[in-house]
Amino acid sequence: MASKKSILIICGGGPAPGINAVISTVAKIFLKDGYRVLGLHEGFKGIFSEEPQIKEFDFPHADRIFSRGGSTLIMSRFKPSDEKINTKLFSDNNVKLLVSIGGDDTASTANRITGYLSKENIFISNIHVPKTIDNDLPLPDRNPTFGFHSAKDEGVRIGNTTYEDARTSQNWFVMSTMGRSAGHLAFGIATSCHFPMMVIPEMFNKTSITFDKVVRLIISSIIKRKILNINYGVALVSEGVFHIMPDSELDHCGINFTYDDHGHPELGNVSKSHIFNMLVQSKLKELGVNIKSRPVELGYELRCCRPIGFDLTLCTLLGLGVKKLFDQGVSGCIVTANSKGEVTPLFLEDLQGEDGKIAPRLVDIDSEFARLCFQNMHFIEEADYEASKAYLPDPERYDFNKILAYLE
Image (tube, rainbow, N blue to C red; front, side, top):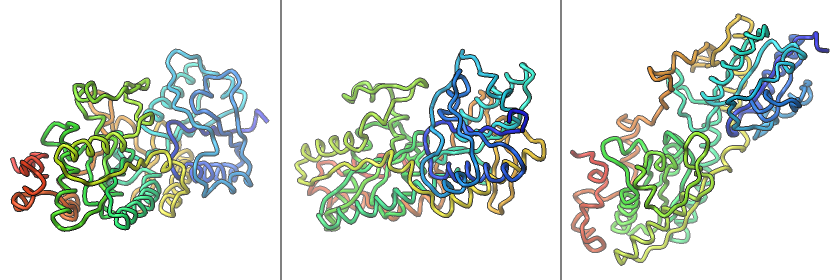
C-alpha cells in the first residue's frame, strides 16, 4: 500500500461548523482519482508523534460525515517548537499533499513543515483551507471564512430564545459571545436579534476601553428603554473586549486569568457574561435602579453545531478547490472562493504585513451598514438627558456617543 500515492489531512485550532464537509469533499474527490486519503488525529501533534493516530477514509465514511457538526478528526492547538518531525509518516505512506484546515497559524506551520521535509528529500505540496468562526481572516472581497455563518445562525437561534425570555419575564440579560480579535459574530447575532445594545471591540476606535465604559453602555440601553416603558432587553458583549483591555484594567478587575502559550487570556475558563452582569448589577444598585439582569454565555455550543446550507456549499467548493489547485501544481497557499464560485490561491505573504503578521479583519464600524444598525439600538442621547435624570444623576456620562467619543 505504501507505493500508492496518498494525501494527508490535518485540522488545527478549535472546531468550526463545516470541517467535516471539507474533509468529506477532499476525501471523495481524491479517492475518485485513485489516492489513499489519510486523516491525522490531533493535528500537528500527530506529525511529531512516533505513533501517529491515522484514519484512512473510504467513500462510505466520507459520505456519512458530510453534513455533521464537529470534526471526525480529533483537533489540537499544538504548536511545534523543537520537536522532531516523524518523516516516516510521509515517506512510508507516499504522501504527495498535506491538506491543513485551520487559521493562519495552522497555514504558516504547514508551510514550515513542508519546507523542512524538502530538506529531507521528501517533496510534498501543501494547501490550506481557512477556518475560523470569528471571520477575522482578511480574505479577498471580504468573503467569509467557513463556519462563521453557521455559528452565527446558532447564536441567533439562542439569542432569539433569550430575547423572548426577556420579553416574557420582563427582565434583562447580559450575553457574551466568542470573537477574540474582531466582533463579527457578536455584531451579526445582535443585529439579527434586534438586541438594543451590543458592545464590540471595534466600537472603541476613538477611545480607550475600560470595564466602566462597557457597563455604562449597557446601562445607557437599560435606562433608555425604561424611559420608553420597555422593561426588558438583551445586551451582547463580544469577548474581544477583553483582548483590548489595558493591563491596568485586567490587573484590577478581580479576575485571576490563566494565559495560553501565545499570551492570550484563556477566556474559556471564565464566564464573560457573568463578569459583566455582576458589574452591571453592582452599578445599578449604586444608582438605586431596581432592574434584574441575568448572564447568558454563548461559547462552545457554537463551534460544533451542524453547518447550514451556506457553509455546506462553501466547504464543498473549497474542498474541490484543493484538488483543482493541486492538479495545477500550486502549493504553499490558501484556497479561496469568491462570490462567483471562482477558486483562486492566496499566499500568506499576500496577507502578511511588514512585521510578518496577519492583521485581523475587523467590523467596519464606520460603514453605512454599521451606522444603520446602531439606529436600531436603544441608548441615551442628548435629547434623553432630562427624562434620564429620574434614574441617573449625570445622564451625560451615559450618552452612547460621548462614551465612545463619536461626537468629538
